[in-house]
Length: 258
Image (cartoon, rainbow, N blue to C red; front, side, top):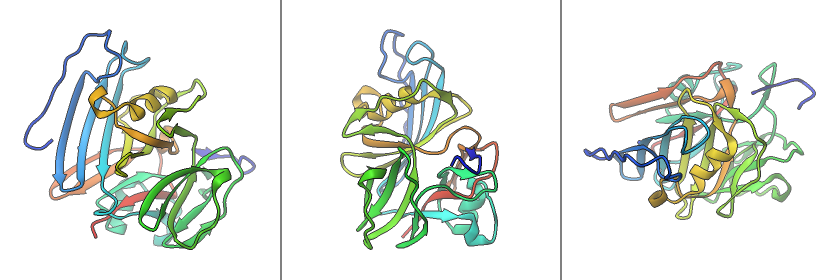
């Protein structure tokens, strides 16, 4: 989302479930592909009646201890803005998803830490911060952030969708969405709506619900910049997929092979 200057994947099998409209928690179709140990890609679909809009989500599940996650900036490549696909190709990331908010001149808004270096200062907004501390992924509220040299990566954006396994009360807004979540076993979940618009609270419910309930099992989740900024690219071992954005963005979250 451009802000004005002052505003600030299963294996060789596919599982398809057809459920009655009265079932609200399980997707009408679910397919997952295991790309490698610690890396899965999936597509989830929900039809109106399960949630308020038709929803199609592309999801990447990552073990961050096998596949490091880093913040990437277009400035690293002498560019003001890049697409998720360009971020991936230039950085060598196997996957990239759009990141945080930015101004109309593509200057980022909010805290950015890249490889233990603070590149952009924190905004005092009611947002969340995704960070990697000593290799462990976390999502915290802005007010709980304290500088720590052990934080290798951080990105401030928001709002938070799930906190301690509970859905946060959110504004009644619908938009294209991208988000990230953390499961109880510390796996990272990256989500992008594929050309569909989603209410924030519906996305939060999907991310919070357990896998057996048709959700993504996140203990915490954070909304990334949405609307035309929402975009994603994956290219690993001959498997490629993407969600194109409406415009290019100044930063992204990249998934790398060690």
